[in-house]
Structure formats: structure tokens, C-alpha cells
Amino acid sequence: MLLSQTIAAIGELNREAMAQAQARVDSLLKPPGSLGRLEELAVQLAGITGRPAPEIRAKSVIVMAGDHGVVAEGVSGAPQEITYQILPRFLDGTGGIGVLGRHVGAKVVVVDIGVAREVTWPGVLVRKVRPGTGNIARGPAMTREEAVRAVETGIEIAQEEIAQGADLLATGDMGIGNTTPSSAILCALAGIPVAEAVGRGTMVNDAVLARKRAVVAEALRVNRPDPADPLDVLAKVGGLEIAGLAGVILGAAARRVPVLLDGFITGAAALVAAGLCPRAKDFMIASHLSEERAHRHMLAALGLKPLLDMNLRLGEGTGAALAMPVVEAAAKILREMATFGEAGVSDMERDKLL
Image (tube, rainbow, N blue to C red; front, side, top):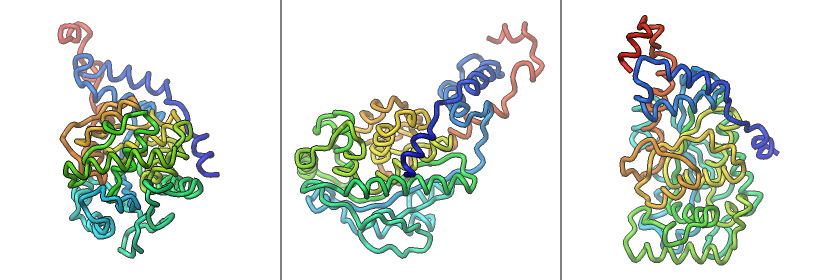
């Protein structure tokens, strides 16, 4: 089984490479620690890749798209049809991730893993597991077998991008109504109360917010997801694009490639991935803190600190794309910034500077 093989292939961070990277960071032409989080990120990249001076040459944003039966409960102010209609805008460069992906020089890969309609838009990878999930307020989102197949689809997509040269992946999502299953996953896997886990999502007023909270509580009551079994949680209250993104994260970790998380939806995917393989957390980078307030609970559960805080809540991988240049900068200070010795600065002069 691809999933079990992938989990078995996820190793520890390379401590020797990290030690070498840390030694170089400490000797660079600057006061110690003066590049802050950039220094931490540089050392993490060394540990992920196993290279003391990692290089990022190609970047891919993988956007998983899927629909949700729970939309029938009135949990979103936006119509489900938007999931289908917006996909070509990602590829022609006029949608949010289309613009920002082009801006940072990243390839945008759009995957239909569970859109309710038949998708024939040119350029969209059709890897549909099923046409949308079931209504989680009335029963499970999907079968366990479908959840596994969706995770494995994500693994396959990640492997394909890495085989084509990508050495930095980012996760993105598209699916009207997907904050509802993401909240349910957060409740089930992190033990966060419904009132704290459910936010407004897209175009949601107070009445719809109250309905969303009631729906998540009902989904948890009806399905009784097992927090000790992430696949059970995913199958019962998750989403197909969430499952696919969990697979992307696991696939990247198995190939020792850093993976940038986007916001709330990809945070839910990361919780599932970490539940399946705790070591996978070491390969994740949190791009930003979402305006969706419960996102901070996800990051806390994962032990991650966001690189950016810009009040973003679009999804699509937009925050992850914006953080890509920061990750590239961290790699470049190891490769391109001179040490005191390389710059010809004597120990005496260095001590005066420090």
C-alpha cells in the first residue's frame, strides 16, 4: 500500500546537516541571531533536505479541489457551483493563486479530486475519487477506502512534481463549504470545543455561523470519529481535498522536500498527516496565520510558528505562495552570504563588531 510505504519512508531531520548549517549561520557576516526566523528556517531546510547548503530551484503549488455534501445544511454563503467555475481562473493566471503563483515563479497544479461536477477544464488534473463527499451532518463523508485513495492521490501528485524537479511544495485548496469539515477535524483530532473551532469561513453572517456550529456538533455526534485513528476522522467528517493535501504533505516528507502549509483547510490536512506520521511535522513550514481564528489552534497543535501574519483567508495556496520567497531567502543566506573568514574580517575586527 502506497500510504504505508510513504509513512515508513519518512525519516528524522538530518542532524549532521543541521549542525553544519548552524555553524555556518553563526559565522556569517552579521551579529549572531540578527536574521531571526530566517536563520531558524535555514537550519530546518538543511535538516529536511540533508544538505548543509540547500538550494531551491523549482517550486510548485498543489491546489486540491473538492465539494462537500454538508453545503446542503446551509453552512456557506457561497454557492457550491463556484468550486467548479473558479478552477480555470487558477490556471489562466487571473484567480488569486494564479496571480500570486506567477508572481513568485511557482508552477500551479490544480487537481480535481472530488468536484461534484464533471471537470473538463484544460489543464486541470482529473483524479476524482468521488463527486463530492456525503453530508457529514447525516453520515460519513466517505468510506475509509475512499479516504485512503484520496490520501494516496495526494502522495502521487507530490511525487510527480518532485520527480519533475520541484524542491519546494506548497499546499492549496478549493471547495465551497470546506471550513466546516476542517473545523470538525480540528475538534476531533485536537480536542478543541466546537465554539472555538468553528469560524465564519466565506461570506457567513451570525445566523449561518450559529448553524455551522450546530452542524459540526451534529456531525461529531452522528459519526463519532475516533481521535486515535486519523483515517477514521478523515473518512467520517473530512473532505476529499483535505485528504489529498494530507497526502501531498506525507509525499513531500517522504522525499525530504519542504512543504509550505497555507491556511485553515491545509491546517486540517496537516493535522491528519501528523496523526498518521508525527515525524511529518518536521517537514512542514507554516506560511501564515489565517484570519480564520481557529487556525491558531491548528498551528499550536502542530507546534508550528507562521512566517507571515497578513489577515489572509482566501485559501487556494495564496499565503503559501507569498511565503515561498522567504523560504528561498533562508536557503540563499547559507549559499550566498559570506562568513567573516571569507570576507577577510579578522577575529579582532569581528569581536569589535559583535
